[in-house]
Image (cartoon, rainbow, N blue to C red; front, side, top):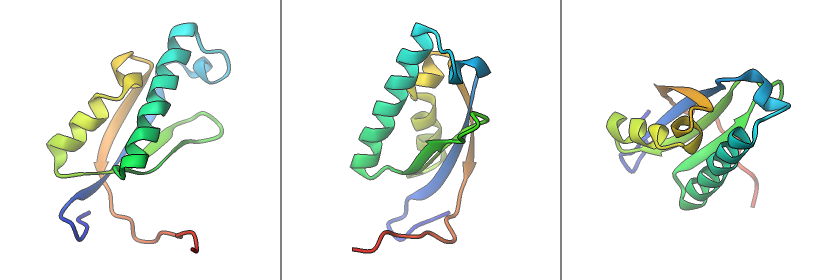
Length: 105
């Protein structure tokens, strides 16, 4: 869970509150999901998010990210626009990356 720079790695697993939002989202759901994605893109560019994406069957999504501690991790998860809008729910877990395939330079 701990990396060399003393930040911990976390994962939150997200679930849509309305499964049909995968194929026929309401305007509000679509806007919240767009804000969710933009935020994750920004956090990835900043180096906070390591990996994020949905299962292609819509069953869940994951966000693997770094935070100093559980309080910071919970705050990052809670501030996700999809959570704030009630479009998704999430559960947080400490996470250890044991293997990672890195792109070759």
